[in-house]
Length: 135
Length: 135
DNA sequence: ATAATTGTAATAAATTTTATTACAATTCAA
DNA sequence: TTGAATTGTAATAAAATTTATTACAATTAT
Image (cartoon, rainbow over all chains, first blue to last red; front, side, top):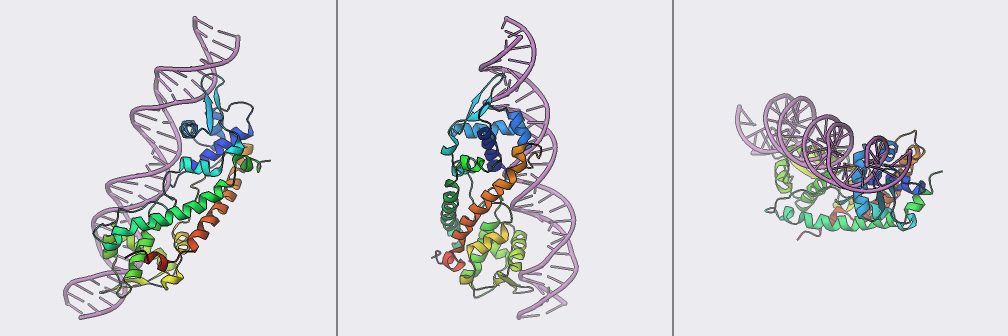
């Protein structure tokens, strides 16, 4: 997908990890990412369902990590927010053409294999590792 | 990118590889992929610049492979048509925030590493290999 | 000459992504 | 117990990207 969801999610989780003493508001987070606060709240909704974030409503509410940062891998994040295909979208090929008829099946195999290699790399890196880069 | 360019390009090259005796027209190719012929010609423009396709204008013109299919890897194709970042787009983070200020630098490192793993997998597969799946 | 085809520009349509507005529900704290 | 801050979410608008369409000059075979 040609969107900012992974970048946005990782940014959110990074902020929560680095300032784990107090819950952060969607307004504050949005200010760091430079996007709309409602988008932050929506993205956090997805991350909350994955157990990566917990929230607290009301005054002095906000967000904090739902798991230890050593237990969150970049692969968890990517898979949670990028449902689509890593090779891009597929066409609605012509079933009457012998090639078009089989094409999506074969490219899908290619995609799954390449995605496995990709995720295997991301799985080796935790949120804790990533946050260690910030000094 | 959330588009069909890789799928479209691989489909084009597959057709040319499987029917390498005669040049194929953009109309015929478009019929198999089920997209607009002009889009096929545009995509072929990019693949021609990469040396993967050669074209012949005029009556009975069309397209054929510019290289042996054993010399074209899926990685060549992907890199040629997917200029953007594999992790998705990045935000214009806030430079005044200590995290926002460094974030894109760090996520870019992550991206390059994961992309290398991904491309390494694609590089191990040639167009000839892929076309061998079609029976 | 004619017909088929590429190459390319210009524009429109469709789809996806992001931003904005609004407000009910919740929670703290004075 | 009232007011202020905040989440959660819906609805809508705006922006950006992607795909489709129209048009036509240039090229080439017959």
